[in-house]
Structure formats: C-alpha cells, structure tokens
Amino acid sequence: MDRSFTVKSEGGLLTALSTPCHVSQGFNPANGTPECPRIEFKACWDTGATKSVITQRVVKACGLKPIRAIRSVFTQGVNGLEKSEAYVINLSLPSAITIHELTVVSKNPGDVWWDLLIGMDVISAGDFSITNRNGNTEFTFSVPI
Image (cartoon, rainbow, N blue to C red; front, top):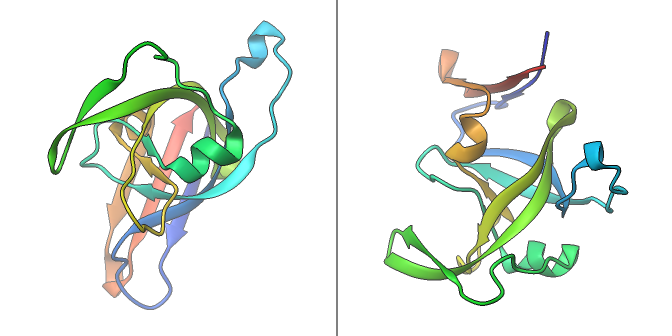
C-alpha cells in the first residue's frame, strides 16, 4: 500500500510542475512533540535541485529559526555559491504525505510564483513519474507506507 497523488493538466503541456503544500516548524510526532500550525504554500517540483528550498515568505509566516545560528551554509545555485540559512520543517504534500524534520535552505529568488522548491531530497524519497500523453502533462508521486 502507498500514498500517492496525480496532477493532470487541463488542455496542454505544463511549463512547471506545481502542487499545494503545507509547511510547519519541524517536529517529530513519535517523540510526543505537539503539532505546530501548518500554513499552505505553493510548491514547484524541480528534479534539477538537489535540496529543497524555501523563500523568506515561508520563513516569516512559519516563524522559523535557522539551525546554524553561528554560521551560514553555502549552496551551489545557478549563479554560483550563495550564502544560505538552513531550517528544519515539516512538509505536507497532497494525499497526507508528510515528511517530518526535513532540512531545507532559504533563498531569495526574487519575485517567483512558488514558495517552496521541492528538490531531489524529497522526490527521491518516493516514486516520481511524468508523462505528456496526448498533449497533456500528468505527474504522479507516491510513497510506500
């Protein structure tokens, strides 16, 4: 048994893969930690990104604190090495797929339509497929239980 979801375009090929998602401060429910409030954001799925990335909108809305308070981390972006802060979040995707205590980095990508870039750290945790059948895009993500 697995949890999965499928996104289908309506009338043409998609130029970006997108889903709603919910983000909260990172916690592990197995430790008895109380659940934190979840806030909805727009996610862009990017197989070219090694790590998942959040914008400052997510940091501010969720009240996140960097996990490396003493020094920043450096991440490789399209413009070379960039200084970034690391955060721990819980990420909830469609179909009750939740990733607890996911380490992400924050970027300032400018004026973008997404709030969270889902990278291969999340995508490789499940089965991901995409097809452009009959001129329409369809992508599926599933995680074994």
